[in-house]
Each structure stands twice: as C-alpha cells, then as structure tokens.
Image (cartoon, rainbow, N blue to C red):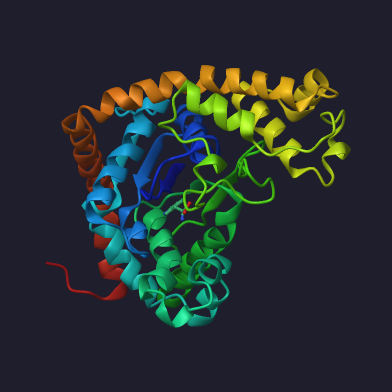
Length: 333
Ligand code: TRP
C-alpha cells in the first residue's frame, strides 16, 4: 500500500515558495496515491514561540490554501496535527529510539537555533522525531518534501529501522522521499541565493498568497536582477541566481520545463520578462487567492473540514498505535 503524508507549518504568511514547493504538488499526487494525508503541523510550529491568536489564524490560512489550491477534502485528509494524539505520543516513543548524536547532526537545528543553542527549546531539538512520528503514525510510505527536508527524512528512515531492529519486528515501512523538480526551491526576490521565507524581514522578498494583482506586479517589477539580458542556455545561469530564480518560477507556474522557458525568453530584457512573469503569476494565483479570501470569511467551514479530517486521521492511526503499544510493552486500556 502506498500512503502519502506531508506537512506545512502554520507560521506567518504562506508564500509562493510554499505553494510551488509543496501544496501545488500535493494536488497532483491525489490522483496517483490511494491515501493522502496533508497536515497543518501546529505542534511543529510551537518549537519556536507563536502568538496563540496568530497560530489559530495561520492554521486556518494554510487549510484554506490547501482547499483553494484544489486538494479534494473528500478524497484526501486535511487536518491539523494537534487534533490527533498519535503524533505527540509516537514522537515521545521516538525520542527514546533516536540518539542524541543523530539529532546533533541536523543542519536545520543548527540554523534555527543559531548562536544561542542553550536557549533553543527542547522541542526544536526533537523536531525531527516528531516529523518521523507524523509519517509513521500512519505507516506513510511516500513523503513529498523540498530539498531542505531530505536530512529529516533520512532520520525518519533511521528511526523506523532502529525501532524495527530493537523490537525485532518488521513494522514500520521505509519512507521514500518524493522530491519535485523545477522550482521546489523558490528563492527570495531580493536575493536569488536565499530561500523565499516567511521570516525574511522584507515583505518585498516574497509573494504571499494574500497579495492582490497590484502587489504581485509591484513586487515582481522591483525584484532584484542584473544588467544583462536573460540567458539563452542553462549554463548562462552561472553566477546569476536571480535570473535562474525568476525563470524557474516562470517554468513552475506555466507548467513548462526550464529549457522551454529559456528558449522562449532567453535574450529578452528583464523588464520585458518581468511583465510576462507578473501577468502569469496573477493569472495562476488569482483564482486561488480569491477562493482563499472567500474561505477566510467562513472559518466555521474550515474548522469543519479540519475536524472531519482529524476524525479520519485518528481512525487510521489508532490501530497502528495500538500495535505500537503491544510491541513496546505497554499495557493496553
Ligand atoms: N518539517 C517540514 C517543513 O518544515 C514540515 C513537516 C512536518 C513535514 N512534518 C512533516 C513534512 C512530515 C513532511 C512530512 O517543511
């Protein structure tokens, strides 16, 4: 059986990188996999401080984006992590399976904790264990993620294997990453060498899923470029991260491969290409952002979707967790 699990954090405004790198790919996966679980990972969010009111709003915004982008709430399961107890429970068990040394190697922890490691939350350190639990509480087999999550998935495989080994069982599956091609990594509009991010202080660095047509056009027009014309081959991206990023975004949004975009737009001036890119962006994003705005006015509907999703997720995780209890040696109620 093949089962998809993926997650997005409800932290701050969703942006184009979240859409192209994650949510949009999930929409396509629904056709090819029997079960798909798409999770708003609020437990992960609180590994760094979140304002409670803001967290609630962001959780609903991410769910709205999934629905607006075309995730089918009948076919797939959309839910928020904290409504299903298996995540936190299995994460605890994995805290006792994973080794300190494994987690000490995680580059995302080093980046997020920064200089002051002593002051990072214990949750931030154990973050990858919770991620492994997310997937394995459902015996997920395939996990679509961006490049930056590959190391965490490797760890999930190690945890599953060690659990199976320690207890002498063949229980958890080996998780396969699904890494997507063009523009899984959308870069900042102000600096083509940095990832587009919710935490960048400059709002000009990202296109958010709440930007209207005007805001999109303005941000694209102001995006950083260099003085040369667009490259006419992939080799021309050498030392030109902004050209690579903008053309990559164009490819992802238009559904073309990069070679095609280079063929059609190579040699053009940035000013002209930016116009084309802004038009394409508005064209592709407008229907989604409009629907997101409509859903934002109906939080009761979103909460209902999340509640039903959580019920379905609980029903899948409960028998798996019951077996985990038996394997570990916990008495069952
Ligand atoms: N860590 C992922 C991110 O920041 C989000 C995430 C949490 C996730 N749990 C997951 C992704 C399980 C895939 C599977 O992008």
